[in-house]
Length: 216
Image 1 (cartoon, helix red, strand yellow):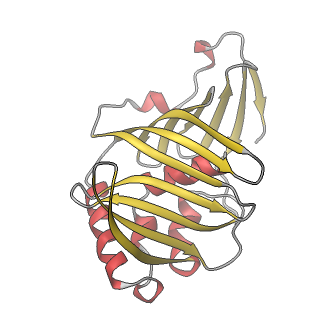
Image 2 (cartoon, helix red, strand yellow; image 1 turned 90 degrees about the vertical axis):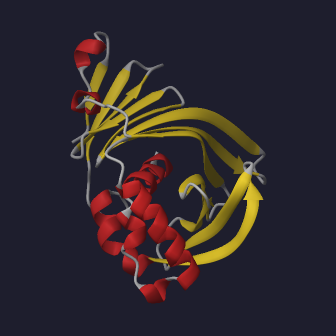
Image 3 (cartoon, helix red, strand yellow; image 1 turned 60 degrees about the horizontal axis):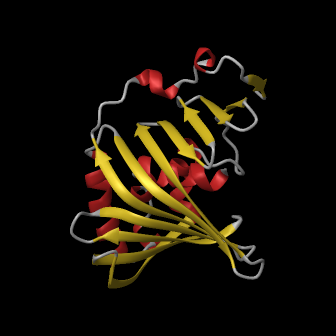
């Protein structure tokens, strides 16, 4: 689940990329990220339809599933792999369809939990950006940029594939130290769609047989 939350924050909290020091990334990557940030910050809301892929060649794992993400500021609503994850910025509800169970957690601030607050405040000392290349992918010209954590992460690299013309992220891949990769390929991105705040709170009345597990 941490990987899902991480990609949400990459997409939703564009200042995560912006707040890096100039000496923490090369000039080319910073210029590109600045443009992506400016574009993303102009959106009040967005909807992203994506494919999630998890690959571990050594373990013989190659899995993929589709997901839909709605974002409004720090709030999000995610449908993925039979789960509905809702966050209003303070509380996270995870509804597991097969188990008819919803788990309730608080958004926590800690070094081990990825949240908007700790990423926004620590990005400038925790990551370094690097422009890798310009190439052709997904039917368009793209930039490839790597984000490398300085230390203390379970992953050693995040690779961003960015549409050069639209200044939009097309793919995010997290390279885990256990030799797994977690990729998010964005098939459709729709900005500024109307989303009511009620969509970012779990309503038990909509799931009358749900078992509520409050873990706060």
